[in-house]
Image (cartoon, rainbow, N blue to C red; front, side, top):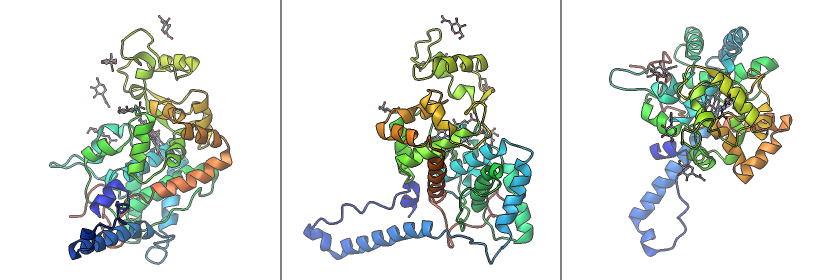
Length: 351
Ligand code: HEM
Ligand SMILES: *[C@@H]1O[C@H](CO)[C@@H](O)[C@H](O)[C@H]1NC(C)=O
Ligand SMILES: *[C@@H]1O[C@H](CO)[C@@H](O)[C@H](O)[C@H]1NC(C)=O
Ligand SMILES: *[C@@H]1O[C@H](CO)[C@@H](O)[C@H](O)[C@H]1NC(C)=O
Ligand SMILES: *[C@@H]1O[C@H](CO)[C@@H](O)[C@H](O)[C@H]1NC(C)=O
Ligand SMILES: *[C@@H]1O[C@H](CO)[C@@H](O)[C@H](O)[C@H]1NC(C)=O
């Protein structure tokens, strides 16, 4: 089951069906039974989530999350980007188990202290929700569910309605490691095949990759994560060594903001002019060669993915597909039933 959780796959049973005689030995049959049990256990996890998991145990849970989150977003329009990205980083490392919220200790460096943590934020808001829910229903609502609900609710604020359904019943993990964040989180410098492979490792398809990348319609990126596209694309240190897959006018504009390769403090909007509006404008940017990261531009380098980009230019398609893909992301490696724990405080595991 651990192996299943790590790869996000359901175990590789595909080789069964061979008819070699040794396959009928009792030891093989025992292995087979164990493999099937593990397979159904992995399925059971995602199915363990359900609509309104807290309906009886903490009826006000979802409304409490929504009201605290909307209260914060009403005065901080950058918060949805933070909370949406937090959910992504949580789910991609060890599954959606709130391991992203755990603080490092003297003998462990946690996920949140890994390099890709630039502009991770919103931890305090999650903890505020948790504190309110611990008062209302002690020991009941997981931090992992709060992260999933907070991402949905924050993005939904501008629409004054909830954009997708969130199944609940996730439990909290007890382990958080920087090394896993470094290996499992996609890099902004990755090409298409690497990105598709990392999503596949989590049980997500190319379509999920293209649709979820649309989250880059909100929020900002730090200069140093893309400025090699402006100044050092071929690595020859030539002057204005710019990525030809970037629109030249846009590249010139970015150079006025990001003055050097080393600038790791300046941020730019990923969807210029509407970086707090959750819409499908990301795909229009991509087609105009204005995707910010190599990983964004990469979505045009594969035929299937480029075709999906074209389709997602229709707002209705984007919103429908986003619902599906974020629901799939929110089920990655979840702990349910009696696995994991309900943390008392989101930043530390229970002692
Ligand atoms: C496809 C692979 C992805 C890569 C390589 C990637 C990479 C990045 C990078 C490098 C940043 C900028 C961080 C910074 O400079 O502070 C960023 C920002 C962001 N990402 Fe992604 N990301 C990916 C997928 C996703 C997904 C699946 C989601 C959510 C569903 C997401 C949501 C966001 C959001 C909302 C921001 C803005 C954060 C802010 O404004 O603080 N990303 N991403
Ligand atoms: C990111 O990691 C660095 C290095 O460990 C740490 O100092 C910083 O506080 C982390 N940022 C966040 C938002 O957790
Ligand atoms: C993508 O990047 C990986 C890792 O850097 C590399 O091995 C691979 O050859 C690249 N694929 C393409 C199609 O460029
Ligand atoms: C430019 O890129 C090359 C190749 O990736 C690298 O060796 C070099 O250090 C980079 N230059 C700077 C100034 O970062
Ligand atoms: C490099 O780009 C800057 C800013 O876009 C421009 O002022 C300068 O003339 C360019 N240099 C060359 C050699 O093209
Ligand atoms: C930014 O760069 C400076 C100088 O290279 C370095 O000391 C600092 O740790 C970097 N900050 C981040 C957040 O990477």
